[in-house]
Amino acid sequence: MSVDIDVIVSSVRAVARDVLAIELRHKSGQSLPAAQAGAHIDLALPNGLVRQYSLVNATGQKSADSYVVAVGLDANSRGGSVWIHDRLKAGQAMRVSAPRNLFEMAPEHRRVLLLAGGIGITPIYAMAQACAHQGLDFELWASARSAPRLAYLEEIKNLAKGRLHLHFDDEQGGPMDLSSRLQQQQWGAVYACGPAPMLDALTAATAHWTSGSVRMERFKGAEVSTSGRKPFELKLQKSGLSTTVNENESVLDAMERLGVDYPWSCREGICGTCEASVLSGEVQHLDFVLTPEERAEQRRIMVCVSRCGGGSLVLDI
Ligand code: FES
Image (cartoon, rainbow, N blue to C red; front, side, top):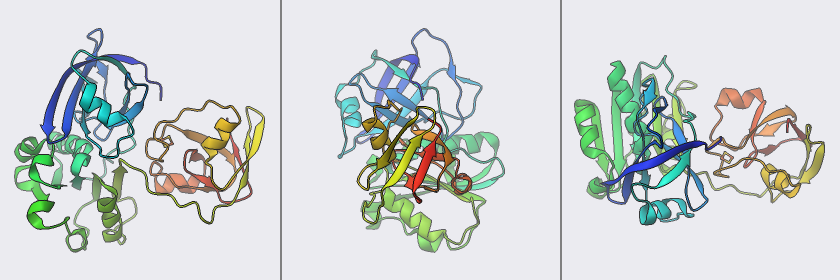
């Protein structure tokens, strides 16, 4: 995704403990490309890092006056959130990408459950606004370690009113118990964003739900074990390059070893930047971008994490 829209930070404000909301406007005052709820943008930070953040104000309007993202201070930050919290000020110029949506709401889902944990509230708040705007039947379950840590708390109270269920770990003595609440599929779909333990619990609790009714977005990839991996042959059809991808490297690592400059951002299988077209080979999908249907088609691969289940993989690169 090219990061080619010049913007200026028009405001930076705290919206919860350790969460800053950043508003971005086009440098020359133009309107910005529109986005549906669930979309994210890439921010090219002045320290050279590119990071993805969900748009809080993506609700499907034809164009946008500004983009708003909310950034939590990550204790394990690799330089993105810490830089934003320590250094970013109103007036800063930077570049962003056009919005991209890997967490889109399906129009056939008319009764939806929205589930947010911590900073995962950002795309979920946008979805709640879109649901309210469209008159959809929705419920919003939002949780955080404590009330002061939940961004947009007052806004979601006003928006969702009787449809809102709040859960704070410090008051309840632990995380929300999803298994008992989700035994029956009362909703057309659940859309969820939050920490990995919450999403893993959701996956287990909804294993019996209908196919395609559980949609989630992760903000951190899973820990990937390298045990049991096998090497395989990689051929890049257009470039005419080939190599062996070893057990302890990714397809992207192998491409870089060959001198191929290929776009990437997260290297965790969650952003979709490194997608490539597959010409042949059996892909072992390890990303969180493709749907089960897209995985079954075997036409696309996220080269930062996914591998080949057979002896060789040919990509259209
Ligand atoms: S770089 Fe983000 S999915 Fe591969």
